[in-house]
Figure (cartoon, rainbow, N blue to C red):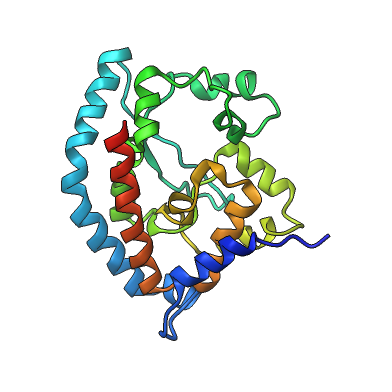
Length: 237
């Protein structure tokens, strides 16, 4: 059976990426134009992000006296180069050691469907709900490890599942795009189209559409759609 992206998600994603420019897909995301957008967008956002990051970091320090920042990046493609990906720490300090015991053979997304991950701290729960834990990624964008817009970084557990299914779609196309140089994004379709409500197939399918049809106007639209969603989460927290 051939896998297909949900038709509504495909229509919405293609409408967001629509452009009259000839520079789309790899011709765009491998260009100086995209890097320039990354520098401008992250540079303008960091001053506003610094205050909640400092407050969140102090709250984490006060709760357990451990480093409030964590690098959740890793060597995705066995290239010998780790993709740095900073976040505010939302789990207990030894979370990776406990992962096999807590998660077992399940994907981490299962914890977002009613099952609480016991590794998440009280402060971390608030940071995740408001997505404030993701603000340090702006530093990675400025440094060039991430792009402002792109696919979401898979957890190591999810990445193992993706690699196990690399001979079928959309996993194969997703991996191919990463090999071609498509960078992980601080935001993207995952952030504006349902987040944890997306199953892995549709999530990766949206990333594939992005990689194939990425455009400057599309990135601007995705960034523009991210801010009101981010603000609404924090107002309701």
